[in-house]
Length: 619
Image 1 (cartoon, rainbow, N blue to C red):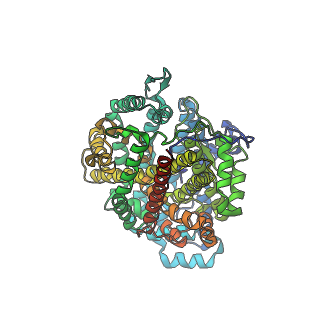
Image 2: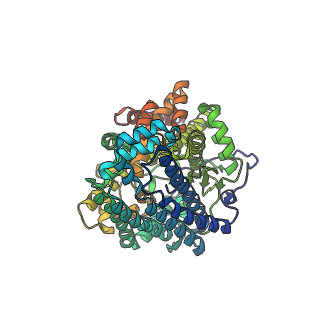
Image 3: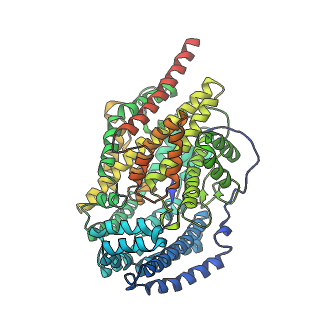
């Protein structure tokens, strides 16, 4: 598979706890290939291997040993293809202005597409063998155990598998499926003409994505409005362009949906992970039922910020309490380590290995990809993490989050063979959000004053807003635009903004006088890269509910819950994510995990209001 790039920005701003830097602040891509020349040589060798893999066609049913040899050759080829792609992708993300690096990424994608096309006959041929023969071969040849889940999944996928010619056509079409996302990334990260704004302090701020992330937290309300108006005004200028790009992405997905006989894009997305549709339905139902909790938070925020009159969308991001501290990269490492203690020695050993150096590209730089992600599909190397660390609490939370992914990959790769090491987003985000929650809880517990405690409580509450409610809103948007695409409706940028504005108003209580939404900001959908990773946001929002329920159990001292969580991470992709989550004790087709998250949010607000009341009494 192509490497999953998991990304997230989470809000706030924090603290300083100096310790020596544990390793380099730039990743060591030499661990993958010593040089670009070595990468070129590996890609050339893979081209030869692709030709050899095609020679296995027609041999699978001759013996169990022949089936094993073919599967091993093909999976080994995919492992190399993943390595080639990850190297090129990481290299390109260091500086998106580097045309040669961007070209290598495209070459890597083309090589991967070539491999997919050369192996497109595999699933039809396996299906032609029949379940009885495949089951007999699995029993006869122990070496096939690594491929058991894959074979069973191929059999399950029979209704949506085409004949060899049809599979070859779809595989060839796959060369174009990443084009919209690549165009989006280049435009949004490298080519947009970002404005420069002078703040009330006289400071100049360039409103790139990184500049916006800082500007939206400014304490001066008029500055925040000017930041929002200038930033979203720039996106509005490109509304039609981004509408065409996202619309193009949706069309590429429609090809697969229709040709494979799925009723809808949603049905296709859920089928791959054997995800019960009621999990999505439960998310939407519970989030909408929980909107009074979100609106309670907005009213508390308005009170704490001292806003008179209407609260606006640009009032959501500034810290509720200001602390004159910074949060260094070194502090991110140490405070995350302390927070992860409840997860036990197995987890901490993997974490400590990961912060020794060579895994992370830490600081922002001109042309570097914005945001943060972890790339964990380098089975024989180690995970890589991209950050844009700004020495604030947002950066600390992001670090903890991405290292949740990194440790997940370390544990899964150690416990699973390559064919079952890769895990779904559904599980991945539970692991990373667990880290964030533990970091926040640790800092709340260690706070040395009511003001500091309020700061961390507010940060934790904002993380719940951004990761649960906001991602669920994204999930509703993605569902609606895909449904319209299924119906062949025209999806212009203006239409997407109309859909998004409706959701913004409902989630933020616009018609109830909670938060007033300016229509200009409805172009925010164009800013969200996750819409190019199909139904990622739905899984993301659902995962935080699972993380909340698991964290509640683990921090209460439940050793069995902790062990189930570690086993969940070690399981990788050895089963379907819903089944794995059930074994961890969480059923996301029921309200329990969602109610746990709402309980957590309301408990935080109860504590914040108690602190504010005490402060008022103390006068």
